[in-house]
Length: 303
Ligand SMILES: Nc1ncnc2c1ncn2[C@@H]1O[C@H](COP(=O)(O)OP(=O)(O)OP(=O)(O)O)[C@@H](O)[C@H]1O
Image (cartoon, rainbow, N blue to C red):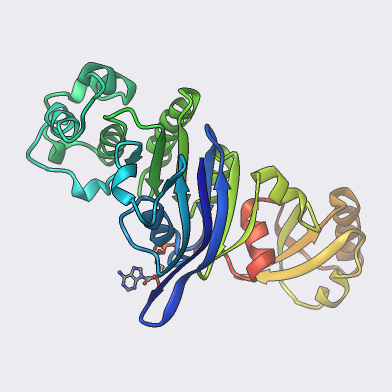
């Protein structure tokens, strides 16, 4: 349904999107995951027909998105940045206004209900909370009942509850059979929502798979984190059973292992023998953050 090949966009001689390609299937939630500046917004906006690529191919439902971007407008829904909403309109007026831009629109009541905004129908946009504004911005994106919806970092800046509410709404849109293309720099968001994730870094897609597939490809599936008062033991950490890699991160030591029990018991035994205290010891299964770290040597998000 969406086919992208060799997409390139340069700004000031720099290829901020550098040969990106992928296919998105009908009905899936497809995510672009990457840090700030990776090129996610530029890639999305080229597919949406809002920016012109320097080269490459884009097809949506067989329409050539590079030559005929206007043809795609009725088929796609694009979430506005919530700052682009009109402060002095109510939620209901905003929906009616955006609906008037299209040949057909979904009933206002249905949209207010679906986006949990019934009680805010008569409330001015400027008095809505961050989560409500964000829900309204997505309601406006689906006002004409599009088959594909583009969401650019839909939950950035929201508190955990508002983020979860929005995830539920996004999954309902998927259940309705829509295709959802989203960008995010939150790995939990990609893990929770996306059927497949393209990891972007410095303008390129460096990996693409389901979240669990990406994690399975890692050499190690678990992480042990702790702090050591003295650094004396570090030299031998690499020799502990199962350890694939030893990393330092902001005063913490990270052991990446494919044998959690084996590594943990040897670690504790060695620390006892060397009379070293392990503080803040915890274990976790690998995440997309670890995938990103393994591929790029960098963190996806700042701590
Ligand atoms: N109109 C523009 N003119 C010049 N440079 C641009 C323009 N738009 C984007 N860039 C640059 O292209 C790079 C990629 O930006 P883009 O917004 O696509 O990244 P992103 O992954 O969406 O990041 P963010 O999460 O911060 O939005 C950045 O270095 C940015 O400064």
